[in-house]
Length: 621
Image (tube, rainbow, N blue to C red; front, top):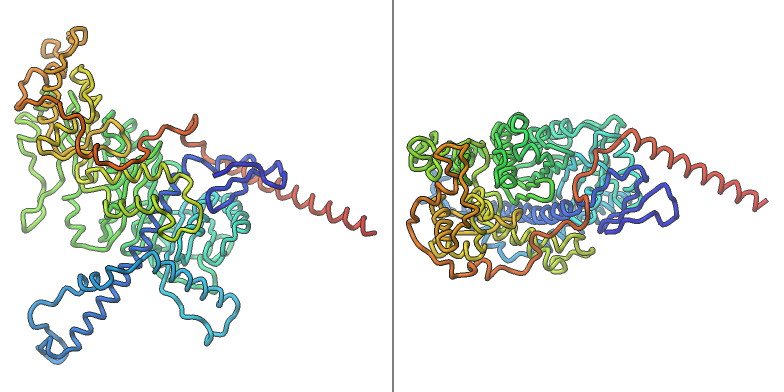
């Protein structure tokens, strides 16, 4: 990635090159570009590539399934007639889908996507050259339709066009005309096919609602620009919808979950971390219908799960449900990739995937409780047992009351099979036919994806080791030794991709605290740290003192220094430092100033061009 002045010496523009795309910005328009979001775009490109291959694979499997079913029922020995119109198989019908997957298991889907992309470009070129219908190459199957709902300058969309194959349509949409004007100027300079990449001025929420019945139902924008090029009319809903707003994505979620195709993908960013982390719980509840835990040590993961709960709840209204592909806490924002499916049967199971957290007000202990349970016949509300939150509803370790957070998503937040493929894709881009430069943030992206691939995706929330030690006023135990002890006790453990000191485990609270009791037994708390707070009840006893008063149920010596996951994990750049100062969000775009600057630069260039023509005429005379 480079950031430099325009090569023609024009002091009124700044040229920024990000991998495959070059953007020309007016000097006063710096707010349209933020280096922090390069990782966001690299991550999105990686996930959409994989999604495109998966959709092609699933489409081919359906076609293969139909063929196998037809062959089966075309054989008169395989069925018996119950009446003149219906056919009934002798015995249970074979699993045609599994057979189809088996038949296609050796297909290289990366090459298949590349082949379809080449066929699509050939067909598109022939149409634009007015080739007679009889001579046109075969029309390829539908490609991906991507909506960049809040596109700003359109850099993300242009990178999608250059770096993702098999595209039918990329819609660059923004409410502000100056942003779209800037995008259109850059489209002309980036060798972008205007029949694929289409610009639109309009409200992102309205675009989502209009596309619920397919892109063919979207009205032209105020400039009378149609959503599709007249030579290439398209039908059907979007395959990928990208929501990357300045702040919360909440206003756009309802329309987005309706507008994506069955099995399509939503890419959603939220930057309102002050809200999602609990500093403004009333605002979080108003936007996401969920109560965060103020000062919760697991705030980054809880924020992801609150957003996923909001997506699931909105989708459920329309007989749809989500399946998270990957979820990330990055810098100052969160980013989730989910697939949306039509299934009323899965919607009924939603209560099993949404739950609450009971957080002790005296220590880091917490309990996650799903909203519902399945009896074998029906879904009923969950019963909170006394062994979970105590007989009197108080923390078993400190006797303090609980505060309740949620509802939030309690099911897995990653599809580790997809994440593993993404890691391999970033490690060896040339093996997957990527003929452009490596992704600008490939080193950091590899570290992020690798750390996610090592997470326990089915264990909600986590502890912070320094927080456990601080509660007991003890030294912080060696991380590797602490994790190793949990493993030796038969529990699963992992790190998280956001917090270097986090411990994610399926061990209950009492086991975690017993480990701390053993640690303090071997490494006693210093006398100066064993102070009482006389202003508090329980004779001034602190939470740590109440915890350490109990005898552990087992004893350990912390001799094992590293757990197996730490010993076997692959080399990667984990938890990198910010590359420069002030690494965070920029101010919201000043649209009025931007428009005035764009017009000023355009007028100056026109005047300069006219002056040059006048000088040339005088020379010729």
